[in-house]
Image 1: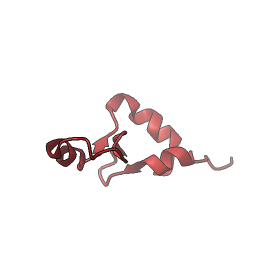
Image 2: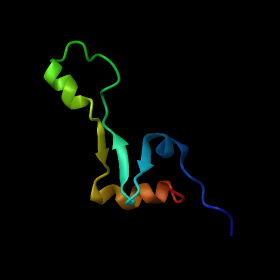
Image 3: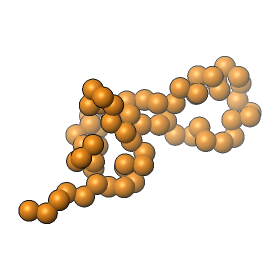
Amino acid sequence: MSKMKTRKAAAKRMTFTATGKIKRRRCGLTHLQSKRSSRTQSVNNDAAQNVSDSDQQRAHRMMPYG
């Protein structure tokens, strides 16, 4: 049986934590931040979030060797 392939688009956007959860980055934080308040920018600096429980199985299927 051949190897399963990793979807590279998913691998570039998500990483596995040591406990097996999947970490992702929130969207909309790459540019155009100057017009937002400093409070909003400091909140957005912590942009990492976990993938929701309902999407965990789908993400594992896209990255089988994570």
